[in-house]
Image (cartoon, rainbow, N blue to C red; front, top):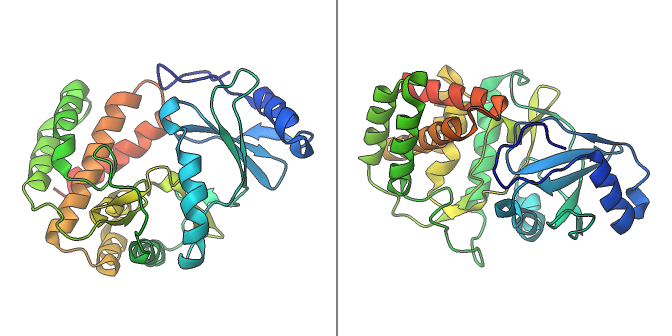
Length: 297
């Protein structure tokens, strides 16, 4: 059972449940060791099964379509991208008192990108290469942009940003945050074609192997929209020379850069307001990203 729930409607998950689910639906894997994977992810509980598998269980109903999205698009994307992406092996059905479909993936070895990168400038080049390659993939057949998703006009989030800044009170520099937000809102919206965006390029979704970027995981926010949405790493992972190199490799003009910075601002203040008492890892990450945005404002 989860010690602390992040969402009011979050379901309970543990290794015993995973073993029961595997036993009833994929018995070939049920005898393998099972252990939870520590993370500050908010949508799924992840369990490592043996040495080569991972089971992902949605925590909440809104996350239940993510596995189907990855099953549809990642096999098409994988040959076109310079970094590894998840490989889904099987989909399980609701059972054993668990209400959602769930999935089994190949285990992707590596550590998340929090303090594990040897050369941040090289990482900026590598991650920009991934983003640029993703942008070039044909969007034919892509689902239409969701107004609640990443890569839409920043104004869609204005009410939530202002509410979050107000709720956070003196826990953040609300005055500077609001000034930075207004600066991003003032630039022109993206009027080019909607391109593929990962939408959640946080350090926890970037895997590092031997000090260098190796894989990108968690495509739950994948959709088409404003490419500025994938500038998140500029403030969440990079600083100084590496941030400038990332911008140069991406080719972001001033308006795109400010929309990207606004994307990080709205994500961080909303995350801080929502997860302050339930997810210390997410609070640390969001606090870092917000501090970098405000220092850059």
